Every structure is written in C-alpha cells, then in structure tokens.
Image 1 (cartoon, one colour):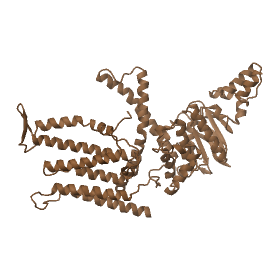
Image 2: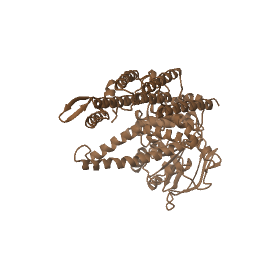
Image 3: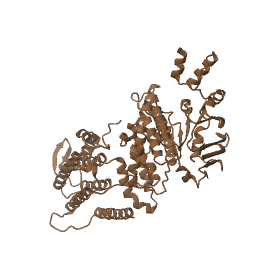
Image 4: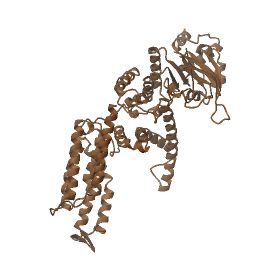
Length: 309
Length: 271
C-alpha cells in the first residue's frame, strides 16, 4: 500500500523543491489555465499543447520524479482514454465533416480523433502538474500554503487555521492508519476472514470486519490526540507563533513572472482573432484571473505588513 | 514546597460509581511519586484530573497555590506536562522537529528562538540525529522520548507519566527510564508523577501510592510498602519478581534482604 505513486513527496533539493509553497500553488493554477484554455484551431491546440508537454516534462525531470512513477501515475488514465475514444467516435463533435475512415456503417471523423486527443493531452498534463506539486512540496508546507490563501476568509469567520491544522494532522496519521489497517487485516485473516477470494458479497462482508475496528481505533486515537494537544496548551482560538515560515525568494519571483507570462501568452493566443481583427471580448475567466492576481497581491501586502508589526 | 495538593478528590463519569473516591496526597518539589494499581483503579483518571482534562470537584486540587478551575487552567497547564501511554497518539507534528515545535508554538515562543530550543532538548533525550524523521520511521521508545523532549522544552515543574512505558518493548522501556533518570539528575527540582503497572519502575521512586477502586490503600516509601505484601494482594497488583522470590525464600527459612540486587541474591544462594 506504500507504493502509491500519485501524490507522494520525493525528497530532493531541486530548484522546484526550494520554491515557496504558495508560489507553487499559484504556478499550478496558472499552468492548469494554460493547459485547459481552448484555442481557435486544432493546429494551435496541438502546437501549444506539445510545447507545454515538453515544458512540464522538463519540470518533472528537474523535480526528480522517476520515470517509473510517471508511468504509474498515467496507468489510471487508460480507462478514460478508451472511454473518450469510444464516446467521441460514436457521438462525433458538432461540425464534424472530415471522414478519416469508415468502420462498417460508422464514420470516424478527424474531428472526433482530434477532440479525444485534445482531452487526453489535457488530462495527462493535469495529472503530471499535480504530481510535480505533490512530489516537490512537503504536505505540511502545502497545508501552510493553502492556509495562507485562506487567511483573508477569516474575516467572514472561515476557520482557516483549524482547517489547515486538521489537514496536517490527517496527513500525519495516514501512515499510522495504513499500518493499523494492515495489522487488523492480519488479525482478521488469522481468524479466518478471507479478504482476497470469494464472491463480491463475501468480500464486502470481510471488509466490514476491517472497517469497524479501524473506525473504533481511529476514534480512540483522535480522542487521545485531542487530550494530548490540549495538555500541551493548544487552543485554536489563541494566537500562536509559527515554527515554519514560508519565504518568497528571488527564485520564486523569477518563476512567478515566468509562469504568469506563460499563462498570459496562452490567453492572448486563445483569443487572438486570426483575421487580424482586434479581440472582440474579454472572456469571463480572464476576469477571474485578474481577481486572483489582485487577491494574491493584497494578501501578500497584508501578510508582509503583519509580519513587520 | 508543595506543588500539588489533592484534597479529598472525588470523581465519577456516570454519577453512579466513583472512579476516584476521596483521594488525598501532595506532591513536593523534586519528588518522584509512583501511582500503582490494578486496571480500573482510577490511576489514569487522576492524571487527567491533575492536568484539567477532566473537571475536578471544587477546591479538591490545588496546583502551584492556585485552585484548579477553568480560569486558572492555562496557568497551571503551562507548568505541568503529561506523557501518555500510546506513543503514536501524542505525536502531533509530521517530524520530530515539528512535534517539539508544536508545544513551543502554543506557548508563543518567538520563531527565532525555536531552533535553538528544539536542538537543545532533542540533544537531551538523545534524538538529535532523528530530528527530520517522520513518526512512522521511529520506534515506540524513540517516540516517547520525543514526547518527553516536547514537554521538557516547555520547561514544566511537574511531569506526569501516564503508563508511558507500558506499550514499549524492553529496550524502549529502558531508554525512557534512562531519560527520566537523566532529566531528574539535571533538574533536581523537577517533580514526577509516574502512573505505572511496572513495579520495578515504581520502586525506584521516592513514594508509592497504591490505589484500589479509586481509594488509596497504601502510601509510603517503596521499602516500607514492600514489607507489607498484603497491600499488593488486596489491590490486585502483582509483586515484582524479586520480592516474590525473596518472600518465598523466607518462607523456607532463608532470609535475604529485599534491597539486594538479583545477582547478589543468586550469589548468596550459591554459597
């Protein structure tokens, strides 16, 4: 159970590892935008998509994710790929007119193939991007990064600190609970429960004998943990100091600008009218992006001011 | 100086059976007190009452001259630390470093001082080389030592060990006990309350309190308690192997002092 490739932290000291978690979250979102934005023609889609794929693959290499892990992470996609191909071939996208070939009475259109390839490319790149983030960022730093983005919501009584603390404790207890699962499975197997063979209903029944003790123990653990935290003076409402402080370095500024420029470039490319007319409208998501930008800058200023005070 | 005064402490979870029934004792500065008793004798409940996780009846617990109530809780807790039984369930941080830092964050220690404090106390419990390890890569004894470091870092006057060694293997037990000895040597004013099943451990302390069904049935120096094995029979606690052995020997007419080490007894018997 420990060989889950997706979402595992790979300890290394690369440029990406050293980046500020907050900045990495921004870069992930920005690159996701670049990946998911739609372009006027398939040619541009695949040229930009290919360029992004090369860029993201380079990032994967820099962050020292092993090629084996990359393939492992893509294995979950097989099902989607086949499903997409089938759906697109039998229900061709609108305006499909170029027949690639015919299979009996079914016409397979180029557009259908392109459409499927486009979605597959997007899915692969999305998974790889997420993998870069989780492989290069300690879960705890990621939590602190998320907490930073959520701090302004404290104004509307959103418990940003509590949420971050809950996530970090959940992450801390994953290996412990996996161990526990393993132990309970062994204990139940020794009493004759068979988890691997038999009919589905029998296996479901077997799993119940795993889940109930696991839950009971998890509740006991949480109670003891709460006691221990309280005894050590933890009060979610009280002010606390920080051991981990996220630092925005020069590297971060560099990557922030680079990725920001990349994202802006793809947005312009996607809305550029190739008949040399000026862009006719501002799409709603550029508005959202501008809002996100302003938000990040504001939070940054408030944070810096608070730290000085 | 009396750090803690417990006066006629009564506690009940369900308002029917008193789990702790009229317990009185006091803890003086620098003293090492063991509380022993059978399962369900109310030992761990007393620990939880002392640190304010359960609410004691009014005026029954006085700590550092303050009555233990909701108002004084913060001030009292900042001077008492507790190490629980299960090493896993008190490890809050994702690494040793983070776990020691957790208590410091709660105590609002400035960020700049944290690293120094963490290194100092990790050194004291001999966990310096494991600072960046995750809890799943540590043994039970190591995790308990981290818990001790986390508490020592908060500079308490009293540490409660709530069966802290009962889930450890012999090596882990020894490591934790050595750590306790070491920290007592370094800070003679540190008081310890150790709640334990392990009589060998209990008899290395200054005073032993024997509990039965929430009542104190014996409270004395360990050597005096040992001379009166009836207390153990009554409380359902098993005597340590050596004492049992010596008692059996005396029944067949061989008198050996109880405070001799096991090796000495063997030597004497072989003569």
